Length: 632
Figure 1 (cartoon, helix red, strand yellow):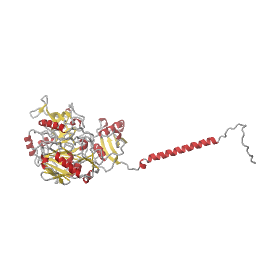
Figure 2 (cartoon, helix red, strand yellow):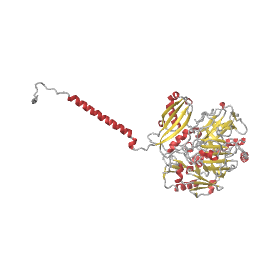
Figure 3 (tube, helix red, strand yellow):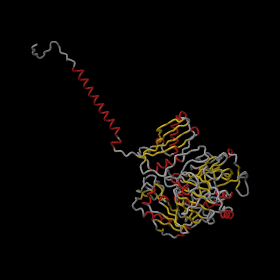
């Protein structure tokens, strides 16, 4: 899935179905582009009407074969970005010798991994430089053969993907060394991937470089690694919470917690990862809908590349009414984007851990009777313009009968796609503590950071799990840059503007507070202030800024070297009285008044002294009063 998070037809045979889906999509509603408040559009969602699968029987046999019970290494990888700001999660993948780094959207609904190629004539500006095959000593093109579509010269295999939200990707297939980062037990492996020569739509405009396909298919990175026998036929995703984002991913098996709940997933019914959803309960009461409503068409599809959740019309109306009836104490308000009729409520607490006191819990009951309990953060998103307001992250799926569960449903949930045993497991956990709770080696916490074989070995300050409940008046950031102060000084203004751009704030909000020279590096303390005339920034805004910093969204130009984020801190808005706020001005006014008064008094004294010592002129013949002589 790309930046807009819809399920996609992922084989050439499905292109006709995708075209029908696109026509239905256009007829159902105008898919407006996302605004800054809503980066991910939410028109009704239509899955492909049909989809064939190359070598389906061979693939099914491979899925059932698995790898037995032998111990195999896995690839532990960090996840970056978040649902609301980006609409997707990414991981870092390294391709080539020496490795070239890419930020790829993790997508269980896609079956090919691809990155922009250096030869691409129609590719957008993404997070990292394009892949350069000529700079990799281990790269080789996938030569034209009977099992692939060939280029016009009949020399190299090609791929093409067209998606329902009207974006597309096409290019050639290559093979190279793919590595998964320093935290991975799994060593680098040769794998086939797509080298893009053209991309359109959301794929062109997104910040991420490309797609990491985790679906079922011969080009899927999972299928390739399983076919080599280097990992178990399973992978896991753990998405961070409402305010944090980030998380962890494992390619291969992980220990199964005793309280993990499972649902059967039938690979023959649908190429998408599906589960057997039977009921949805709100505040302990089942929705009054036929359980078969969740079993239409593809069934209930679980897709890591989709942002929100989409229910068939009848189920959505029942869910909306059930939730709304439980929050009658809150005020219903408009959503952050007038283009969408979001269902939003004002008057709730900011602290996510307290939302259950206002919003009802939701349970999803599977066909085997097991139940996955959802907290409010699994079906709400923050209102970006009203503090303490939240909106439903569950929407009606147009007239399409498919139930689609996106990333919002599995926030702070470990989801294990056990393909070998044809089931999907769910385990509620804090994703930043997943390694420790699963007792997996000495692996560090998967809190967001830049990692592995990158040009800069950075150890950023940790991302926050939450901020105290106060309005933030100032964020301070200590940053070490490996450039000497004399060389950095002329570029400070440029650096401040660059930081502001990457943090998506006004450049006037970023100011240098202190600079210290440290040999060949420079330590800078930055101050990030509220925008415009605002005296404070919201908790959510501050969290977003800190999150981007800790994930190294700020990319420095080569002449400024590399940086390390040492520490960040937030300071609350000062709650002083009017007199305290204006004490300095009042004091200066009093001193000025005193000075003016003293000056005026001195002028009067001088004037009087000047004229009192002078006798008025009288002519010699003028008449004057006779003076009485006094005795000597």
